[in-house]
Length: 78
Picture 1: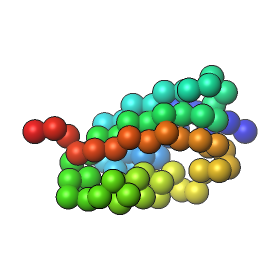
Picture 2: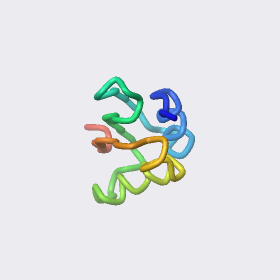
Picture 3: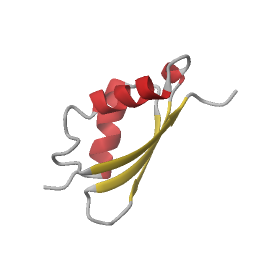
């Protein structure tokens, strides 16, 4: 069963409330998405730590309902 883009956004925002999330369905199949996540809570964290925060928010859906997620993260530009 595929995962809906809104569900991905909701899971991320539940874990990272200050996040601005943009989701794109790359293949139209509900399995391959690209996400851009911008959050002040990323400031001072490495890219790996930022990605870990997003993956934790997805509650183990990666590799299951969500097959692929191309992820870009950053704190807001000042």
